[in-house]
Amino acid sequence: MNGMKLKYWLIVFLLLPTVADAQRTRMKKKDSNAKGTIFAYWGYNRSAYTKSDIRFVGPNYDFTLAEAIAKDRPEPFSTSAYFNFQNLTVPQFNARIGYYFKEHWALSVGYDHLKYIYDDNNSVYLSGYIGSGVDEVTSWEGTYSGEPVTTQNDYFHYENSDGLNYLRLELTRTDNFIQLGGKDQFVLSSNLGLSAGPILSFNDFNFAGDHDRRTISLSGYGFSANAGLRFEFFRHVFLQTNMAVGFHHQLRVRTRPNDSSSFARHSYGFAEADVALGFLFYIKSKNGCDSCPTW
Image (cartoon, rainbow, N blue to C red; front, side, top):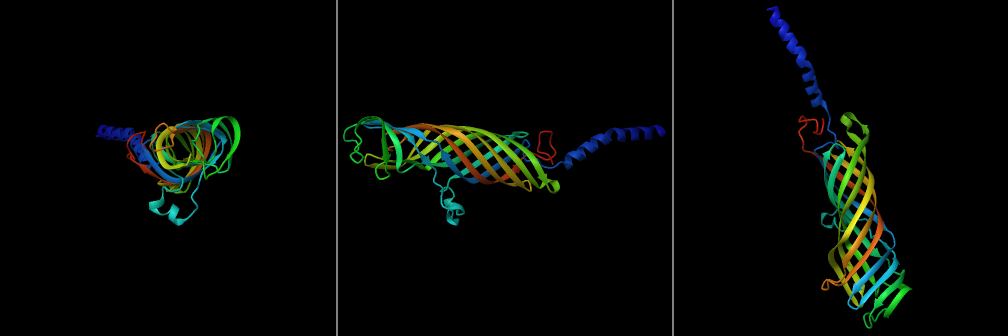
């Protein structure tokens, strides 16, 4: 009988660490940057661009406007523009969905809807060739080599206002560095990321008496680096700020809808700032394995 009791207490003694470990696993809290977490967000942005040399090619012309200035075009704030579901895509916006494939590391795909507006009254330098009779408004004709000109919106304009759309894949590193409240209900995290992807352009072009709008083309590519902060509420909602710098190379921006040989080409640096509202979803069970989001 004493032998049976001894075996019983020995088994209990051996199992206690296992039971305790299981209990600790159940008590662990969710970790928003652990493997198995999905996030999605929507926000709005501002952007700025370096000067660029824009080459324009079309029927009987091939010229470059050097040191061209461009800017974005933010939508004036109004409830109808920013809070009406039908108008959500009118302002400059960001949308993204991602997945933490490893602790701290996420892959995401998204859509940065930027706007690139060639500045009116642009003082640029004209080089290249414009054939006789191509544009009777500007009187540009012949061969040029760095001649200073000032363009006017009435007879020359170029913009991607319906979208300089940067469709980018991003690799992100997230680290929590401030955690407050019971069960860490409020968390401040840092995000560092690298991105690359194609550019989808919706182009407006006014030259030689023809003004074409919304000419669509897959015009080039971009890459960028970004840093930001994420403030989480109750582990499921977050506000995020982000700053990015990068480079766009638009190899062939189609300028005429019915003429594939007409295009613009240029490259430039850019900076972007955005603010977004997002949500976190946990798809792993709370007590599965070491790689699952913890509780």
